[in-house]
Image (tube, rainbow, N blue to C red; front, side, top):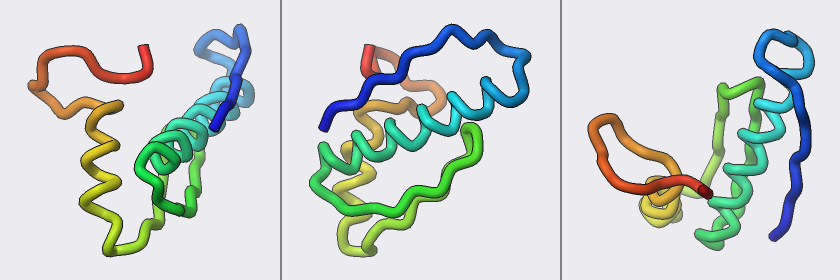
Length: 81
């Protein structure tokens, strides 16, 4: 899976910032689903995301998810760089 998001929108532009946050949220979620080999439905508005995932794939998806996101108090590298 490949995706490219390019932009120069700074915080403060209600339309552009929200749109790019939405696109970023969708692409991150789809990337993680692709890495996990799981089909998901994604609904996003800004950085608020609803992910619908098959129940039997949840634990595997969650394991991959935490490789790219971090929990409070976790140290060490995470994310796409």
